[in-house]
Amino acid sequence: MKGEISIAGEGPDYIESAFPPGDFPRYDWPERPAGLPAEVWTSETTHRDGQQGGLPLAVEQSGRIYEAMCAFTGNSGAIRQAEFFVYREPDRRALESALERWNSGAPIEPTTWIRAAAKDVALIRSLGVRETGMLASISDYHTFHKFVPGGRRPAVESYLAAVRLCLDLGIRPRLHLEDATRAPLDVIAWFAEAVLTEFDKAGSEPRLRPKFRVCDTMGIGLPYDDVAAPRSVPRIFARLCSLGLGPEALEFHPHNDTGLIVANCLAAVRAGCGAINGTLLGKGERTGNAPLEMVLLHLIGMGFFPVRRPDFVALNDLAAFYSDLGHGVPAKYPLYGRDAHRTRAGIHADGLNKFWWMYAPFDVPKLLGRPLEVSLTKDSGIAGIIFLLKQHHGTNPAKDDPRVRALQTWVTAQFEGGRLHQADEAPLGRRVRSAGLRSVLALSG
Image 1 (cartoon, rainbow, N blue to C red):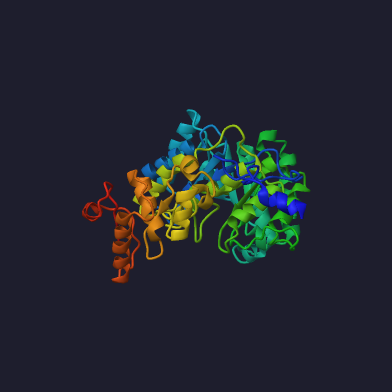
Image 2: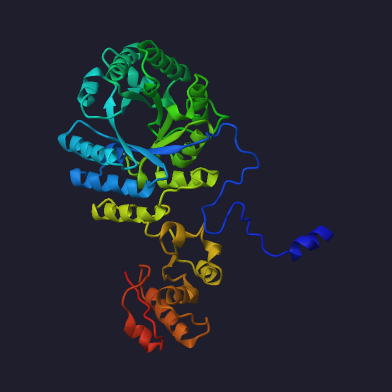
C-alpha cells in the first residue's frame, strides 16, 4: 500500500528516455540487439521504381527530384545512392546530369538499373557509373515462366555471364534478387555463392565485390524470425550473412502490398542488412516503395545518425513539387500528408490547447516544419475554435467567452443545416466582427 501511495503522489513521468523533448522517439534498448549493424544507410529508386509507378519525369523533373534528395540528405550519409533507368534517351540525360552533380560534390552517387543480361551491361559500359543494379529474378514463379528455356540453371547462367562482364568493365554488380520472399532459401544461397565464386575467379579488386539486394517484390514478406523462410525477412538475411556477406553488401527493397513495409525494413536492419532501398515519400509501383523518411525516422530512433542527420524540413519542398506534378501525397499520408497532424475531435483540440504534447508524437513543428492543426466539424466543439484563434490569430479567449460561444453556435448551425465538409481557415471576417473578436476565423469547403 505504501508503494501505491508513493506512486500516486509522484509528479509526471514523460518517459523522456524514449520520448526526448525536441527529438524523434527513441528505441530505449535494454540491450542493443546483437545483429544490429554498426552503420546503416538508404538508397533511392524514385528515378526507376517511382517513375515506373507513374511519376511523369522528364529531364527537368528528374533533376529537381535529385536535388531534393541531396537537400534532404545533406552531409548525413542517410541516402548514399540513387538508381536510374538507362533505356530511354531522357533517362540517360537525367543520369548524366546527376553524375555531373555528384562528380562536383553532390552527396548522392548515381547508379543504374539494368536486367542481368550481357546486352544490357553493354548499355552502361561508357556511362561512367561505378555500380549497377542488375535484375536477377530468383523465385520459381519467375525463372520457370519468364525465360526460354525456363528453369533455375538457365536463368542463373545468364545472370553470371552479366556479372562476369560487369567485373571485366570495372563496374560493381548489385544483384537484385527479385521475388526473394517467394524463393526457396537454398536457391537464394546457391545463387549468391555462385556470384561470389565468379568474383573470386575474376581476381577483381575488393571494391568490385558484388552486393545483393533482397526484393520483397509482392510485399508479402513478414518481419518475424519465428515463421518459415522465404516469407521471413530476418531468415533470408541470416542465411546471406552466414555466407560471409556483411551489412555493407546487403540491401532490402520491399513493396507495401500487405502493409508491413516499414516493419519489414526494420526487421531487415535488425537481421544484419546495411541498406534500405526505397523512395522519399513512398513513391513507386502499385502500393509504393519503402518510404525512406519513415524508415530513417526509426533508424534515428535506433541510434543511427547521432551527429549529422537528414533535413526532414527540406522534404516539404518535395511534397509540394509532387503536388504540382499532380502526384501529391495522400491527405492522410504519415508525416507529410495534409491531414497527418490535423485533428477534428473536440477532445483532442482541448488537449492541444492545454498541453500540446498530449496529441503530438514528437515536436512536429520543429522536426518536420509542419504545424499541428485543427479543423472545425460537428465534433470539434468550442476547443476547436479556440485552437484556431490562438494558433492563427494570436488570441486565446476563455471557453465561456460569449463571443466564442456565438461562433460555436454559428458553426453548429452550419453542420445542422446540411454542411458536410470540414471547416478550416478562409476569410470570414464579417462573422468574426459580428462576434466582437479582433481576429479572423475562417471556414472553407
